[in-house]
Image (cartoon, rainbow, N blue to C red):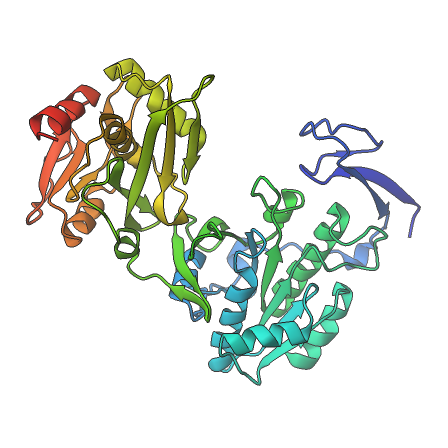
Length: 453
């Protein structure tokens, strides 16, 4: 063992320096550098790991098994991979512990042992939640221990197939002098869990708190160390929750999972389009239906806009469910290309159900909802809008158009506004009229004047 030395690491961006600074040179944040003590060690030559040829490694297929929740399996890429390390992040109270306790209940029912390590709740609190969710099993072990160095001994005694650590910010390693939740402790505890997962072939689920910006608390290197990163999103004032993959070494990150929070736990939403389109009023202005594509399936979601007279001063732009800068961009295009006088009006936009949409194909629906509220005329309930809006007012094509149109026809809609030139080669959809639009001029002419709207 050599002399110990120290360095300073930014808790926001993991920037490292040998001296303390008030402001991090990496991300520009103030007072985010924490001291980390590092012991220099010399590895004897006999303890080095041997290098192996790629062809010498035996071929083996990944054997996944189900978590018991189809929506979580979808985000994981088809199921749980043995030996994987999964990081689950989300706002406080969003349902992370509830989700993992349900997964523990499903796996224990098929004969797998589960170890639930909680540094925030007592076993009695977890038991109360399990009774509310009707989970009762002899294969779920509860552990209220924060020292992660003791975890290996528990694995030898219980031999669990799944280990849940709730949360990674509350556990610590006594080998480091820093407090739990610091940059050094987060990296050390995650590295310990990763070594145990790869060595034993067991699955680890780590719960991670998020910052006010929505990112998982701690340095980005924490996300690089794990195999899968999943964000549990949703507005706590709504019952719907969304699982969104940010990283997956065993599958695609394009998939999402939809769930509904109830008093007995989380329930999977197998037909999201039907859920998001309930209680629609034909006389309401500023409401438009869009066909967003999330993962491998389309979602029909209603977007609501409100254009109202502004108070003296700057007009307000507020968005819930999409990026606010995106709303400002669409408003600017409507003002420039169609001379809609929106500069002196407040514009509010909301995506129903508390879902956050990133798909650019909903631009046309956003524009339709704004124009509907501006003109004070309702949009027919049997109409759906698909298209990305360019800065010059053109309507751009979108991917997976055939899958979107199939979902639209299945839900019983009669008309769909789509980008020009995309109908060619498209199979006919029974009872669905496809209206092609090239730019905002064509769109407003067909929608406002041509249809009598």
